[in-house]
Image 1 (cartoon, rainbow, N blue to C red):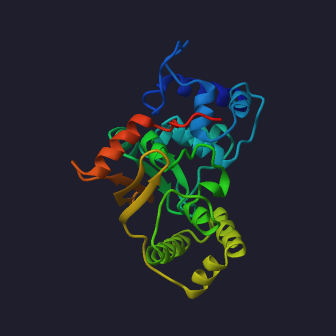
Image 2: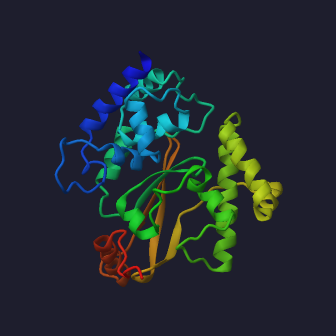
Length: 281
């Protein structure tokens, strides 16, 4: 019964979210105004097959991470999110776990910044949501899974990035990442996923282990970033880090001063989207 009710709820919520509201193209013929299964799967970072099995009641016991991702993708209210957890026979994450919930007010803010690259991360720097402009500027993150979505993991394990730091900037950025993660661990000492992330980072990165053992403290500060885009080249943007204390979220916003070359390049990126100007082959 619970699996059937879970599937029915997912279908109802999927039908009420328009592609435009989710930042997806709405072209082509559609049988319903809401999201297709493949679109929900893309937004939640799970497979279409798994979404299908959940809706049909053939999959049970989804993980906390999957349920949280579905709640974000479906833009559920606080009460709806709690109901989804109950249908999945899970207890909503408590205050000892890094929160990953986007409140309706935060979602409305993102909806109004459609022409601005914006990414939202939790306090452990796991990327939760990125709008199309962020994907166009920084690269499409929709294929990232698990620790790949964590900014500290990507920076200390050598993942490719479009950001170009000087050696001094890179060192300061590393210190800021470790300090921010340490502060998060102090707020959520019982979060097992966070503990596993730190343990894996200490194993995978000597530099992270060194900084962690040094006990660096502080906060990750906003800065200007130089980004090398594959089509428009280098552009330097203001990078502001907005903190949502109630949900312990980080909103990263990239912008350029009007009338500058960087602003013109950012406008061109908005036209290009994630497409490539170079034909394959």
